[in-house]
Amino acid sequence: MASLSPRTHAHSNVLSRPDPLQQHPYHNMTSTSSEIEIAAQHLAKAKRIVILTGAGISTAAGIPDFRSPTSGLYAKLAPLKLPFPEAIFHISYFTHTPEPFYAIAKARHPRCLKPTRSHAFLGLLARKGLLHFLFTQNTDGLEENAFVPADKMLAVHGNWKTQRCHKCNTPYPDELMKKAIAMREVPYCLDAKCKGAVKPDVVFFGQSLPAAFDEKEKMVAEADLVIVMGTSLKVAPCSRLPRLAREGVPRILINMESAGDFGTRPEDVQILGSCDDGLEKLADLLGWSDELDSLWAAAAKEEPTDDEEEISLDECINRLVQKNQGKQVSDGHKRMLETHLQSKFAHVLRSS
Ligand SMILES: [Zn+2]
Image (cartoon, rainbow, N blue to C red; front, top):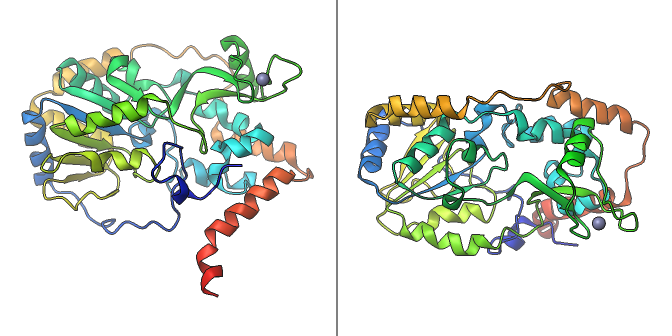
């Protein structure tokens, strides 16, 4: 079994969980209007912009972010009594207990979501020929809906467009997958001898990133401006990308709070608040507001086609809790809980 320690994978391309002990020194900073003006000046001069995005650009589309204390996905998962919240997206857990993932998959599934203004801003940069490359940690595919060309981006954590058996890698038909997600039931490999659970091609914790990551990572050093938006930079290996910007190249962070090593370089600019707000102000200063509006309108035009029963994430979680009442937890669950507690309290055990 893969190690569960977040530090083990710090320099590899295996998706690893955040370090619970990591604290950021700049959390209480606030942004000023002059920072937005400086950011706008950087944007006006830039020709090769590299961008890293995370859940914060999709929250306005209805996807809960992961780490907000009460509204984030991980906080909402508490009733499921997972060994630790991220276990729901850990390949070792999915292997023996895929039910929680499918209980919430419908609420996470991006099929009826619309791009936000932040997605439209990315599309606008691409249209202006300024987007050198986009790394997104999101799996919702909304960047493409907002006209970011596929060859200008990498969905570092995969996406929901395809799926396969997690054991033997046999692809699984879209129609059956759609049905399974709608019914909140686990789809299994069509090979009756295999019996592996089917998983969307989303990269889980403990799995390797797409092979293209190594190659594309080099593009950060080619940037004349790096923008990080809507991510707390806690998940490796994307968390290391901003540090690959060449010395002297401005870096802009647009996020609810400071993140990573932002604030340690003289050219760093931090716009603290929602991505949609920050980008709208930037577009305004740059005289791009009308273009942004019309691109957003075009991107959000398609009506959702979902006519199935719509239930909230809380309700999805509730139903699984009801279903599991009185059920014993599996051995795999116990093992993961033990390993997790050992790694979490290693520092206490060592010093005692
Ligand atoms: Zn299989």
